[in-house]
Image (tube, rainbow, N blue to C red; front, side):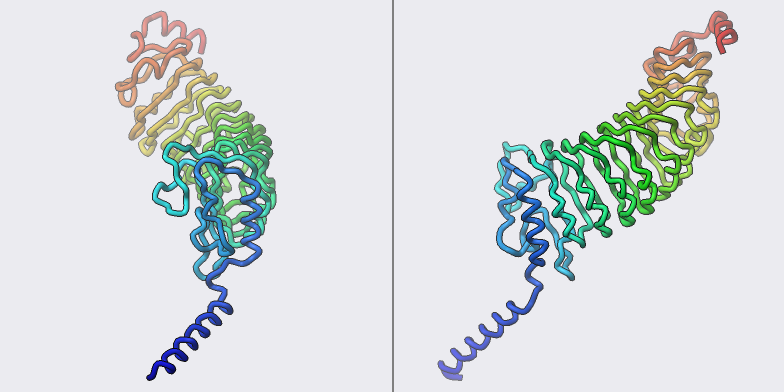
Length: 363
């Protein structure tokens, strides 16, 4: 092939390539999703690190920091922006090792136009305020929501129960108020619920046990009132419950103490009544904290039947009588039992005739 023939061939190849790029949509995200992300960006200010410096051009699927698209549909599938884990080696972020992750502004409802979104993580930015856009309950493919570590206020959207695919809901460390929505129990795939360190109030929904896949429920440091629903004990997969620093009242459901839970923290509430004597061989508590309540009666003797109780704290209650002998009590220290009415025995002072007499009179 001569020089002219080669030039013509090269020109044809270039034209074909240009035509292919023009008619093929695979390199670009939809213009509506680009516009939605631009509106999302406009509602936020991030002065220290420059994570939005990579949000250039019209293709939001190509090297935009924190954005991932479905490789088949080329629709936005993930928004992952964490203030504490900015990658130092990401060439699209102007990193400053002395800078800390900080962002203010609010979460724009424009994200609700990203109909294929499955992950929404905007966490640990300290300054993001405003409400959770109610329209996120229309994003039926959402599996993961993490808005923790901000100053978001308002309520959890009431229709949160419409997100049937949701596995993680983390709204911890914000200023969220209002009640736990009753529709929350309609999330069949929810595995982790973290609402710690907010201003939530009202009761835990009585039918909480409908969340059959729940593994961790963390509600500490709120203003939650009422009883602990007995239905929570029926969640077979539940391993970690933290309801501490609330205003819960009533008795501890005996079914909760005889369940397969390994971390149970009910401290700093207003729980009363006896500690049910229902511990058994399958009981395995890495942490059992019932301190700072109004519990009365004896220390449950069946605790010595448990396979393992690691950390146990029964301090600051109204318990009385002798501390049972054997594990776990033989490795515990006095602070685990301090400030009770009349407990005695190792690791506290030995029981005396006075203790037995006081127990008979008071109990």
